[in-house]
Image (cartoon, rainbow, N blue to C red; front, side, top):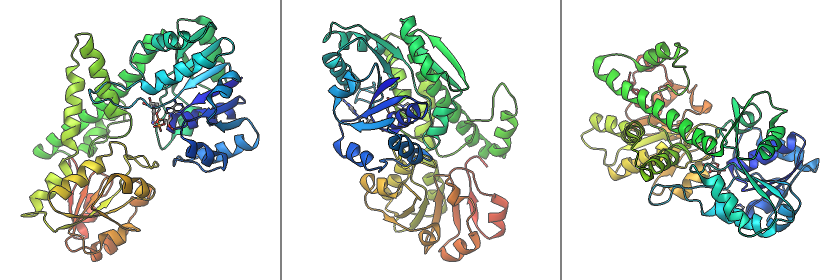
Length: 427
Ligand SMILES: NC(=O)c1ccc[n+]([C@@H]2O[C@H](COP(=O)([O-])OP(=O)(O)OC[C@H]3O[C@@H](n4cnc5c(N)ncnc54)[C@H](O)[C@@H]3O)[C@@H](O)[C@H]2O)c1
């Protein structure tokens, strides 16, 4: 099948490379000329395990190409994926300008009937608007399929190729079947729905997962007050199949490019039709508060944080990515800076991204250097590199041995034996 994918970000590049790997001829299109010229040289713009290899292989075997030429890619493709960003607008709604720009470009350049696939996360009703937009500019038949993406950064290639399910929503049975045929080689359930239901499945799934995280974070905060350990509690809860163990780890709040904006956007969608999503609103409020907790804990340990040196382990919003959009580290570090603390941070991959976002902090090469002279250490991102540290060595480097374990990854008893003051979340 000949496919064009508009947007070569986390979703578009992964989808394009994986669809090529499934045997399709894929052209990835972006407006970012540097990104495209880098990709043509084999330089991958993001860190994502397994992506470089799959891009390289399919590029060399000529199933995957990169271009900024929208016209040519549309003319050469029957199926056109839209995987551009849908960032949060000032009002909280999803900003659809990039999606509609692509729809218009497709309409203007369609040389035969086309099937557009909305892969970006878009509000309910967008598939119909995309069809209208593209059809304004062409006499050729345009069908639109909503095919939301559920991949997670950090395991995106695996998630795309081994999904729990694929959702395909369309008014057109023919278009839905065509897109279904793309996913047939994957061993998973394919759910065919209306475009509205498909669009809602994506938002409802993200809002549910965000709520699950905020739920366990609230329980964690209560655990601290009543002497329970949230790690034991979430394990005991998660063993119940009706609850499930995933997304039940307490910590310093969720971040990333999806949950925060999608939770906001869904509330806006509801508000616009006269509904209020009170559970989801509270999930968001709990999350905002949760991101302040590591610093609140630290403030109780010192008269003032002014001039205190705080080592921060982890900047990415989660392990195995360089993405820092809405990362808890940003809130935590900015709060530390407002308290006039000195911050020295370390992250295996996201340090270059951090330099564009955070100012007034120093960076270390590794956790041991970060710990030198530190008055406390905060673990924010649970990278594998931070799991097995030599805490005897870290303790020797630190000025005072205080650890805030923002993801509950360390063995508190071991750390206590080594003379640390250990403060987890809900333990
Ligand atoms: N990142 C994730 O984990 C994830 C997971 C599921 C769904 N989504 C959704 O997928 C969509 C894309 O997310 P992302 O993280 O890949 O975004 P991203 O910001 O990483 O990439 C978007 C890309 O689109 C390009 N672009 C913008 N306008 C364009 C145009 N007119 N033509 C061609 N390219 C254009 C940008 O230059 C950029 O490279 C969003 O709606 C997001 O909510 C993201």
